[in-house]
Amino acid sequence: EWVYLNGEFKPYDEACLSVEDRGFLFADGIYEVIYVHRGRAFRMEDHLARLQRSAAAVRLELPRPAADLEAAAGALTARNGLEAEEATVYLELTRGSAPRQHAFPAQPRPTLLMIARKAHRPEPEKLERGVSVITVPDERWHWCHVKSVGLLPNVLAKQQAVESGAFEAVFVRDGRVTEGSSTNLFAVFDGVLWTHPADRWILGGVTRSVVLELAGRLEITVREEAVEASRLGRADELFLTGTTTTVLPVVRVDGRAVGSGEPGPLTRRLQEAYLQELEA
Ligand code: PLP
Image (cartoon, rainbow, N blue to C red):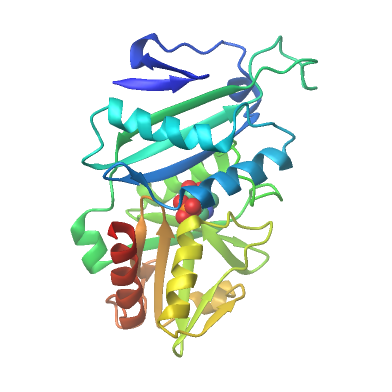
């Protein structure tokens, strides 16, 4: 197994990071997760654009041109024998290694890492029958639109979900639903598709924007507006989106059935359309 580190391909066991890498010490870094279907990265341009936005927000510079990263991601999946499979590429960029001090090093040398793995979509049974979620207070910072590696609140929320037998934890801030710990959330009320606007309170998912595009094509009315947490349980349909999650129906919230308790018709149509798009 190979990884990509600062412009070189290295065997997994030989790739080394400094103990003072700022990604490790301060979570001073950003990341992307990209889906690669049979050697082709899905919506790579969207991921690279978001990477550039995250980098600019935290004053990091991409150490090489975006086109090089795309080529490296492709080469890495091939080197790992994943070109005929479904893979994910995890890309992380940190402010590199320097003696531990909060302020930026005078001459930062960023760390750029990529790991390619076989993709794990949710099990067919989950995609078919749906999953349950719990709601938890959104205790993250105010820059949720930045794909920062500082994911401790997300990790704690997801762990709480797992320990309560749920698939995902959905954040609630100021009485409104924002998103899942690593997913975006959509709701259907009276045939209208609702999702939180892509502002600083959520990570605007690439999958989220593909789903909005598909909703347009399917002539589904969309409202990019936050759903009040008190209404969530009364939605006709709910689903989660994410790069590895794809489009996943939600059939229970905090132990109560959503709608009929089964994945709804709009969810099904968008799920089908999304999988077609992914495999096109
Ligand atoms: N929201 C959060 C907090 C995430 O971490 C992620 C992905 O990891 C998403 C949403 C979904 O984004 P995408 O569809 O680009 O994978």
